View 1: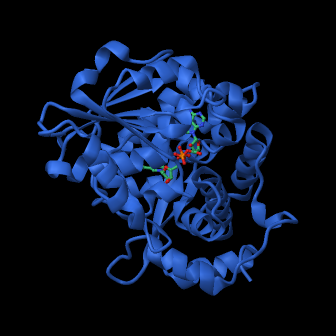
View 2: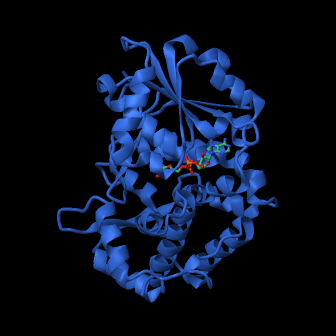
Amino acid sequence: MNSFDNFRSQVAISQSFPTGKIDVSQSLLLFDEVLLKTDVSSQETIQFIKKFTQRVGFKGGESLKDFKSFPKNLDAVLKKWPTPINRSQHLVVLGGGSLGDFGGFIASVLKRGVRLIQIPSTWLAAMDSAHGGKNGLNFDGSKNQIGTFYPPEAVYIVKELLETNPIEVMEQSYGELIKMALVGDSHFFKEIAMEKREARDFLWRFMPQCIEDKYAVILQDPFETKAIRQILNFGHTFGHALESHFGWAHGDSVLQGVFFALEWSRHRGVLSDALYSEFVHVIAQKFDRVPAQALDWYKRPSAKTLGSLIGADKKMTGTGQIQFVFLKNVGQPVLEKVAVADILEEAKRQLWVK
Ligand SMILES: NC(=O)c1ccc[n+]([C@@H]2O[C@H](COP(=O)([O-])OP(=O)(O)OC[C@H]3O[C@@H](n4cnc5c(N)ncnc54)[C@H](O)[C@@H]3O)[C@@H](O)[C@H]2O)c1
């Protein structure tokens, strides 16, 4: 059983697979089946997967997190599980955030908890989703409605695995990286601003800081009960609604949610005009990203459609409001309770909705 006393997983960052660290004979591997494709994956990855005699492949992506398909998927896992399940066995999850959320949930409920190791295969999962113990399945079109807190014992980050990410998958990590750079304690947005290289060449450099900043937050508030961990939702309240409505990738949606939150922070007087301009400029320059609602192809949804998604997404406070994360400066997030109607009014003002 994993220990809740230790939300800090053992994190090992290396160039190659942690072959000697996992007892493959005592483990079941859940992996993204794309990683067996020779035209996408590397020989090292394929060899690593084949070391596990007990393994189950799934198609990665948001559909894996759909609660409706969960019974069938769980059945596939249980059929492969070495019986009888005992407490020394590990569930090893090799994949992006979708596999991580799905596998993490299974590990937490199977026999009331089996040992869990995460090996993130996308930049987004390596920097963010594999850490902190949250998992989640989607229900009725809304994200992460069913889930638990269940930290993995270990997270192994393997550079040669991340290097096979197609560019568009790699770029999906930008949203969570920028979020952490803006709200995190180490203020590394300022270092990003001074980087001479493009983002794709500096992701590896900022990975440890991104992870450390996340642990610094979750260790203070592992179960999100003290209004501390909520700062990691920066960009997510609005981003999740865009993701559910448009079917955009999670990371891209979060980045758009960050733009929304920055502009709202500026408009409310929380963030100065100068800092707002600086942040948006750095994101455009280093990550080549701008707010989508100003672009030709953006099709504005109705306020009602987006409002129902926002309402379903987050836990409301007792007064029917949502804790929204604004930003005052790098490393200075500000939590304020707002009504869904306030978010929609702002979304109208920013031309995100009709
Ligand atoms: N639990 C958390 O704390 C947390 C935090 C952030 C995001 N998330 C969740 O993570 C998910 C997004 O994660 P993601 O961006 O990793 O998406 P993903 O798992 O859907 O992977 C994106 C795509 O990349 C492919 N892929 C994965 N690894 C690859 C590799 N090495 N080479 C080539 N292709 C590869 C996948 O098959 C998929 O098509 C969302 O569901 C989001 O809600 C969870």
